[in-house]
Image (cartoon, rainbow, N blue to C red):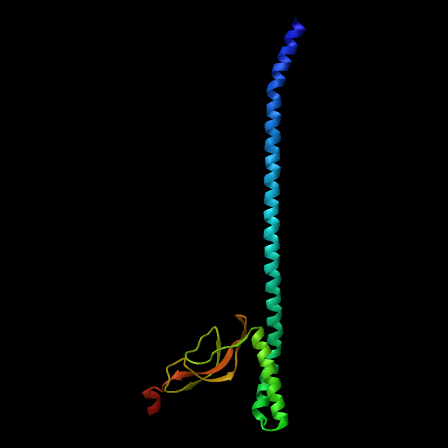
Length: 172
């Protein structure tokens, strides 16, 4: 009988252990499922972040190329201004220039507005002149400034008003 009692004790002890294994298996499977979901979400976020990084790199690359083309744009504009556009040669240059500017604008080139008051984020004051205008008012543009899809390629170089002459300076 001692053996029967030992077997019963062993069976009683083993019985509660089996549900614990199932609970452990459930929690382990839930944990694995949770890890899988987290990894899937993490991978999805990685793909989105990579896509954004790639798009940003493309924008920056295009902006760098556009910045390198700005001196050519400036020189072309000067050549058009100094050429007689009534001649065949002048007409051809004007057409090529307008096509070039049109393509650049379609891709994202924007000329910076240079009227009104000086904006340090868009303009660079190269010189100041005394005038009847309020101090900081843009009087003339030395070199045009450009943006490429909201990326600053170069600020506009301007001449700004230093304000009116003071009476003391006029008397001297």
